[in-house]
Amino acid sequence: MKAIQLQSPGGLDRLKLVNLPDPEAPKSGEIQVRIHASSLNFHDLGVVSGKPGVADGLIPMADGAGVVTAVGEGVTEFKTGDSVVSCFFPTWLAGRARHADFVTVPGDGIDGFARELVNAPATSFTLSPKNYSHEEAATLTTAGLTAWRALVIDAGIQAGDTVLVLGTGGVSIFALQMAQSMGARVIATTSSADKEKQLLAMGAEAVINYRDNPNWGDTVLELTGGRGADIVVEVGGPGTLPQSIRACRIGGHIALMGVLTGFAGALPTVELMRKQQRLQGLIVGSREDQQDMVRALENFNWRPVIDSSYPLEQIADAFAHQKAGKHFGKVCLSF
Image 1 (spheres, rainbow, N blue to C red):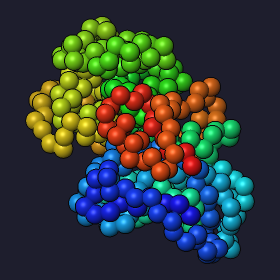
Image 2: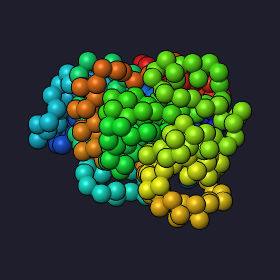
Image 3: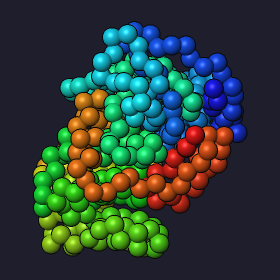
């Protein structure tokens, strides 16, 4: 089988296409999946760019979608021919958060899905939404489930809420689509006039250019009659968090899942306290959360937004495109 391996110490030029032996028949409790697609996330970019401690020869990519080709003894949930999508935390099956690291995450602590075949415990996958392409399903593992958890599980979104999404990456676009499907209004930020048009065409009620308007938190307050956003999908981190706190309503929810602007910074704790907001960090979600999301997606009338698709052997080009920040939605691998 074809696979991509990351050679130490990392870097896009250290992603190598190799031929590896096909896996043997799946063991008891396992399934074998022919992987047809993956999608790129900021987390994956961090891993391949030289994250410390990554094993030499690691197969990258946390997201994987494909078809079950064989079923091990004792597996009853799946059958040959089922379309499936991987889970970000294969050992977090349900309940409260159990992980604060990535040692069990495919493409980081263990080999991921930049390969044609994989054997894994059946609980490492869920069924894909009916009628989704493999590329569309592959966008769900990380970005889709992160947006779902932020809005539904943690924030308890309600019809009539105002949701603020930052930028046009995978999580933010998913959050826009999900929020609208649940009866919420969406305000978005971007630095691109072209992306502003795309966001408005997707149904965003208002779009704020954060380069032209660095105090965009005040603009959100103006757009909401002084109330602020009920939920903020905060993907930026320390560089955007002060404005997100400003933009969020009294008693509102800020879902923090991004570090695009860095890993540490000053925080206006007095305003956060005074406005009695809930600032909650999150890393994706559980297998049960993913199953709930899949059921919901099958009832929505939209599909994931895919910016572009690359073959497996052009994985470095795909990451370069992602790193340039010009994409709108998800960048995928299809093989």
